[in-house]
Image (cartoon, rainbow, N blue to C red; front, side):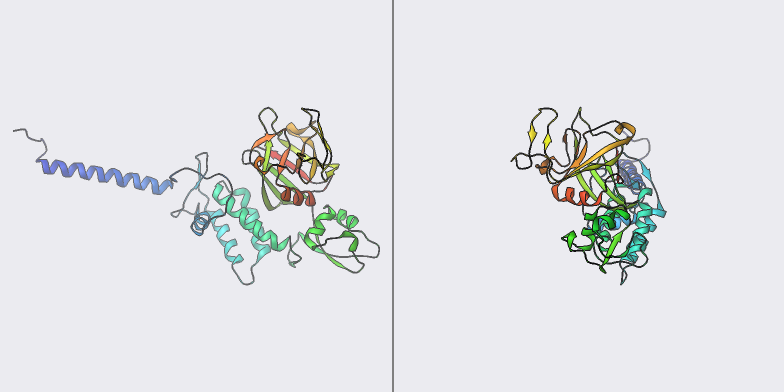
Length: 331
């Protein structure tokens, strides 16, 4: 009868079971240490669930949500960032919330983040509070980005806005003014200290809007197709480059489109941009504009221009100032 060199069959079976259990334990520990997600990183901003918010706030803190995981597979633990995010969320939950202090904390931590989940969470919070400090008539005494202005006799909204490096439409937005001609002497306006600028991320099909260097909101975009890619580099909004539904001639077909044409492709607004650095230098004919086809957003299908949903195009048009606002396009 065959015999096992190290004892009975039962003992051998126990050794195999112990070995398998040990392997499972080791694999479990590795997974816990490196916090490997089951399906990799998530691309694109979306509203986070309560569980995801908690994970985003604790990511990089060394706990169960631990080291920040990027889509490209690098790990960058950053406990300091996670702590700042936690502090900002806490002071936003106070009554009343300390909005300006939280804005500063979140805006300062945003460039430090490498985790897509943390970036999305922080941008989401900053976008939410922008509706309070920027797009409402509320003025917070400690806010250095906004202030008040008393209208003098005969003053025009366009001239007032120019002093603060924003279009007059920006002051209409924040003051809920529907007719710029209705301005009256002695009226107190909320003013904002511009300029607004934009950063367009080609890899993520996203436009991030900033007021000076403070993040405000993000918008999905469409970009140039293969062979006609939207050039990277630094651009400035052209003088005279902002137009409402201008006529347009397709450089490929030579066809001229009028705003009333059923297939007019430019949507609600046109913001011409001029290249000043990098691959953008010397490039002409490029713009940020609306679109007739919402399905083009999030795709590479244009002739090089940046496309926005029409409502977003109107808001961006209202905030970017000709000859002042800059647009950086990056990979």
